[in-house]
Image (tube, rainbow, N blue to C red; front, side):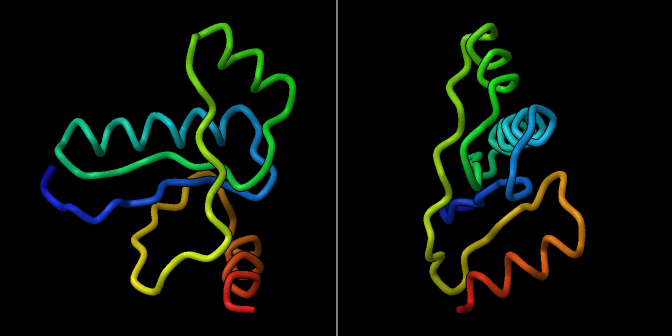
Length: 93
């Protein structure tokens, strides 16, 4: 991998199927271009997403740790600015 530091890829707070799938695909893309990346989720996935992942024989991403260390590299997928502000505030508190 080009960089040893892991890029944490995740979507919005209540992940639906498109958020989880795009997170998985983007993390996979980064790994294919030799970037150390891993997909995460911010909360439990819904039943539709569980069905899709089970049907595709793909494990759901790990839950993102609560406290990210300073300097953590992240890639935000399928979110909006208002959620980002809330997420950053909740991580700082």
